[in-house]
Length: 135
Image (cartoon, rainbow, N blue to C red; front, side, top):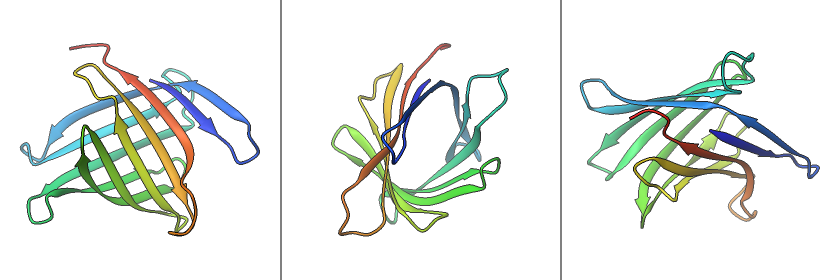
């Protein structure tokens, strides 16, 4: 995973990292682990997402938690065309939109955005370019 972080002052930070995805809860949910930077370097982000499909809303209930940074978010995710879009709120009370785009069998582009209110423009804060290294 290659990560780009866009700071408010225009500074850009870049890292490598790793993601691990798998079915859990007897195939009822997807759990992933996001690690930045790539191990064995000391982590600056080490979190997990649990995605549980709910046929009643035709979407996914999503819970993100990064205990290292005391960061968490709750979202609802749905397919939008060829993309997956997750909308919710983070621990700071900001609106969040996380988009999985350019999805293939071996890669995807993840775009993290936030805004303070519905009136504000979405600001891109993170991008992750993720590619499979093992089948």
